[in-house]
Image (cartoon, rainbow, N blue to C red; front, top):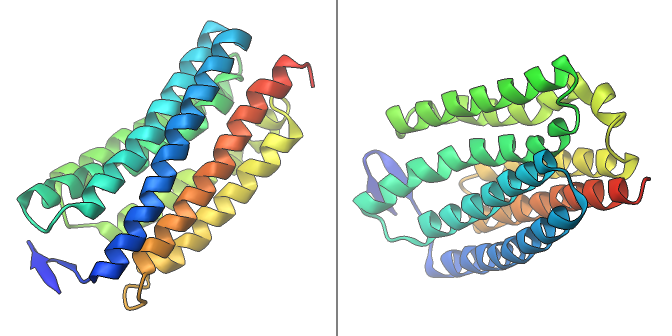
Length: 222
């Protein structure tokens, strides 16, 4: 076990390899998926929808890339710095995932307010993680979950603007993320970090499918 600034890292070689494989697969699919999404959004979408596709794609690739770097980096001051970026990027991914769906309802004051609010909370979360590194980690987890499930408040108006399949995939992805948190906090379980990130990659893939479906089916008039 290695400790730095009160934070402990207790992963053996095989756990690090497993986690690296999970991240590598996730990053590869994120890069491919982002390219496909932006290509089709360029063909099918309005300027606002294209901007939302870019925001989502950058958030997805950035978050997985930073997580890969942080978890693979040896324990050092650099890893401590990457930890701040890693935890901050989760707020970015949550807000970025909301963006393609809420943008479609930007003409609705409630959905526009939700979009602004979710990014405001993300900004506050980033400030929390950067200003107080290594502290308030449990509070951050509650913020992640609260942000993720706050979409229930606007589920009705969103459902009127995106395909039913996308709504279902959003729900499934949220459940996968939430179940993964069990392993995130189960620190005594061997390979818990790789398992947790496996849930993250799986949930992100489901949410990506929701976004792509939203663009493709909307273009088809479904």
